[in-house]
Image (tube, rainbow, N blue to C red; front, side):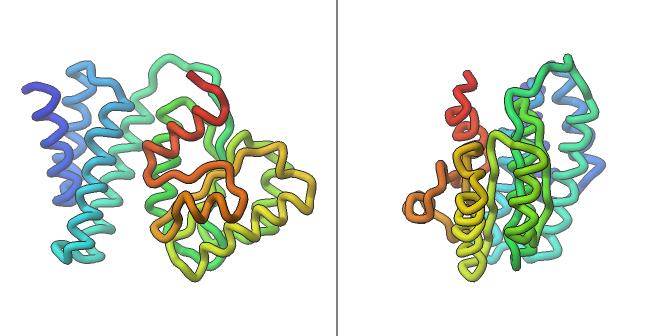
Length: 214
């Protein structure tokens, strides 16, 4: 079976929430010598992208999305456990969903993609307060801080966190990237973020660009 067929099989297994089948496709892809980043981007992430469009079209419902998300995470964990040559991280990326927002699927996918791309990832989780972001930046000194907001009612927290970083004298030491369904480049520019990413792959590319990683 060629790589395209393997990836399509993986995509369908994730969409259907079939963890056994998805795991088998991941092992098949690794045995075939496929790159882990490619499996993640063109298999697992593509499955979630398609599922997102199906959600928007009313073709799937929340229980199905959550089941697929669990399969996605299990497969991503399997990829990470597959190991490989240990390399120094290309940068330190801190991620969190802002206060009042309990949605973290997109943020989790970004974290997995960042790890696969060689970043050290510190995940603060969801519903993270502005104070917690500031203290974490002081303690961990990340190169990139990713602020996720999935609601129009919570995206204002991205601005507040940046303002707090400025107040604490931390802003110049960290690149801030924002993302989430209601977020746009216009919003990122308005609140003084360094970058906006529409999806996980773009988040990785923007992070690499900001840090000058080739």
